[in-house]
Length: 182
Image (spheres, rainbow, N blue to C red):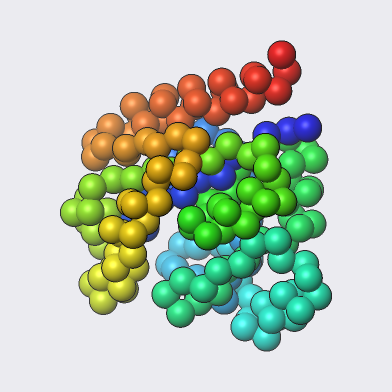
């Protein structure tokens, strides 16, 4: 059985950038939001209509689903099973999504990645989010920080220390994966 790495953290903490440097096998979520500039359908998210999302939900195909900033996100069972069948995989979720996936995949490893509030704010502006969108998305920052105690690992992504964060995450993932084979 391959390992599933679940990574969570506030918006702008570097989850996607870091994990894509470390692992290639990403479980891609569905979302009803519009793509940001540069996002690719099927790579960053599977962009679908609200109607299609509701259809997947009604058919019981989603093992995880959440509403965030007025948009819906979800992971379907087939995608998760496929990704974990071909190798160790990672998925980026929020706290509630992590709890839902952990019920279905109890041996997953949960990582909470964060960066200080002001750094997250700056990251989101640099990636092209509007000030209104950044403020809306960071409203949950304090609550998300309170949830970090429920994770297997908590990692601070320090500004300007991207390579250091990659080393820490890689070390944790390698340690967890090697436990499978001993």
